[in-house]
Structures are given as C-alpha cells and as structure tokens.
Image 1 (cartoon, rainbow, N blue to C red):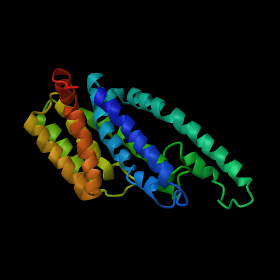
Image 2 (cartoon, rainbow, N blue to C red; image 1 turned 90 degrees about the vertical axis):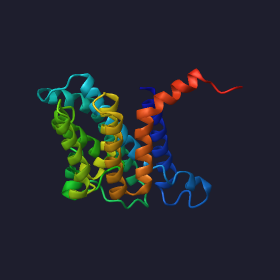
Image 3 (tube, helix red, strand yellow; image 1 turned 180 degrees about the vertical axis):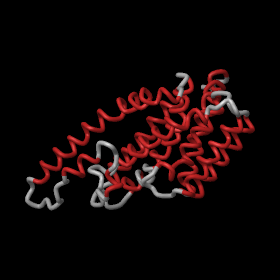
Image 4 (tube, rainbow, N blue to C red; image 1 turned 180 degrees about the horizontal axis):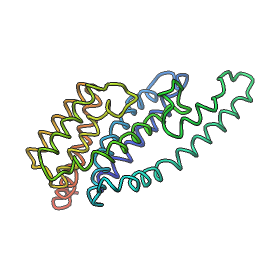
Length: 255
C-alpha cells in the first residue's frame, strides 16, 4: 500500500528531526532551527496508527488463528529485536567512551537495568531506559501481544463481536491511563484498526465513520488535539489516500 510507505517515511523523518533539534537542551538554544522540530514527536503517534492498521491487515491476509500466535510473535520479534539489541550495545559502547571524559558524571547502568531491556520491562522495575526512544518499542511489543490474543475477536464473523471488541479498545484508555501500558495509546491504534476493518470490507462506510469517530474521540480526550489531528489524518490518508492518487492519475494538473 503505497500511501503507508510515504507516511512511514514522513513519520520517521519527523521523529529523527525532533531528536536532532530538541533532544539536547543546549543546542540549538533558540531560533527557527529548534522550532522546526518542535512537533516532530507527533511522528510516533502516526506510527501507532500505521501499526494499528498494518498488523491486523497482515494477520487477516495470512488467515491468522489463535494457534498461530507463536509464529506471529516470532516474526514480529525477528523484525524488532536485532536492530534493538544492536542499538543497546552501541549505546553502552558510547556510554563507556563518554565515561573516559573528565567531566562525565552520569552513573553507569546496572546489570539489572540492561537485562530488563530484553523484555521491555525496564520501567516496571523503576529503571530508566538506556535510550529514551525505546519506550515506543515497548508499546509496540505490548500491541503485538494484545493483537495475538484479540485479533480473532476483531475479525470475528459476527459484527456484534467485532463492535464489542472495538468498544472495549476505545474505553481502555480511560480505565488504564498509565503511559507505561499500550492501553493509554489504544485510541491511536484503534484508528488504524477501524481503517483495517474498512479496507478489508468488514465495515460499511457508515460503520467506518462511526468507529473512526469513537477512536478519534478517545484519542482527543486522552491525548489532546495535536495527537488527535495527526492520528485522524493518518487514518484517513490510509483509508482514502489511494483514491486521491487514482484521481490525480486520471485527471492530471495542467502544465
């Protein structure tokens, strides 16, 4: 789906630019360069919507059943873990190199802190991430676990079962608001899930708009207007972006 590749690229660029311009409070201190990356963190929210769509869409196309959860998780981990583990080693190497500087005062990470990164358990035991960006991977991993058990309900033959499962997803951000858990971000993931149901012909157009509204409302209430705008925009581009491209191909703008 071409529109998703473009959205991934824009989201990745936004997040990277945010870290380049805003992660270090000493550089740049002010001006247009720092301001240009102020809202780049919203790229993470776009990624959550994309994952909300692409994971169930891939599972649906593969004919996923609950008994296939070990294979599903193994495939997801093969995509996630290798670069994650390499980056941990790189982070530790950079810490060691920095520690050789006379002015370096940051305490060394403990063995427990490092090992807890393997299962994305670091914040649950009171430790900090070695790299603050890792929290997004932890949320993604929790989403994979959630989809492994809930997808059969989301794609159930009964529309009532599908709607009940979706309603629970929209209510959980209010019941379990801790940012350490995926439930806090389920409004964003639900925007992607609703778009999956629509593109898979499991929802009518009216049904999609209703579920889209519920997920967008949960996102707005829990995470505010900026996240709502980016999340809703990402979902709508996945749902209808291809149509815009087809119209442009048939009716190109004049030179």
